Image 1 (cartoon, rainbow, N blue to C red):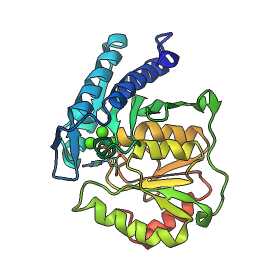
Image 2 (cartoon, helix red, strand yellow):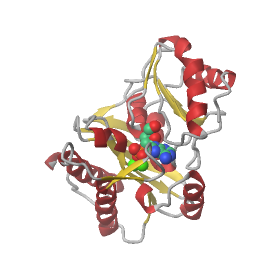
Image 3 (cartoon, rainbow, N blue to C red):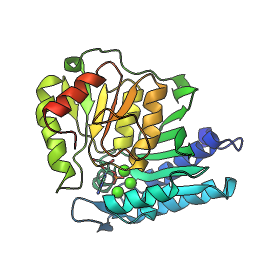
Length: 280
Ligand code: 2AM
Ligand code: CA
Ligand code: CA
Ligand code: CA
């Protein structure tokens, strides 16, 4: 991945370099991997690849910025309560890196080539850099606060459609079968007839990057974590879109029930989720 090597010590360059390195490594393991552990049952998988990628990213960040904090999925106890508590301990940090080393583990395990590495940097709780890398397509989505979001050197822009019915929308089927899944299913039920179609491709971060790139008009999902959302949220905002929680509150690191759209269809989506009693 010569194209993505770090030339300077800038935050963005380090984020890109870490995502590229981890992503390349993950992709090299695709298809040969068979040992996996379940975290919270059969729907919530974790592999040695998730852990190895996080270690790799952590080391690279700390090499450049030894005093920065890192909040990564595999460094946190599983479950919403534990992750919320862990986030509240670090969310005010001067420099906080928010890392999902492999977003789409289920896809990775099955050899379905749609997964990503998501890395964001927040300064005192405000996301200023977001990078999402899909090693299967060698696509590096990069956003910097106030400077726009880019793919292959080209500025990204959200899709122009103004009506929900013209929208291609994505969501996820959460691993939490007890709470998040039933709420998300209500949203699917309500939204399916009101949109052009819905995709459930298995990587929240990549879905959000696709909204930023104008390939999707919107995305929502219940019960996510900061590491799924942070990079993609900045990317959507910097591409002209809008990110809130399902009740319409502005995006922050503590948002778990996220809605990210091109902006034009945002209110229609929020209204539909409320009508379907699917806001969580
Ligand atoms: P992961 O692959 O990093 O675990 C798909 O619906 C999305 O949900 C993916 O981004 C996936 O991220 C995430 N996800 C998987 N298990 C989860 C869990 N137990 N709680 C919350 N999100 C989860
Ligand atoms: Ca996981
Ligand atoms: Ca994830
Ligand atoms: Ca993950």
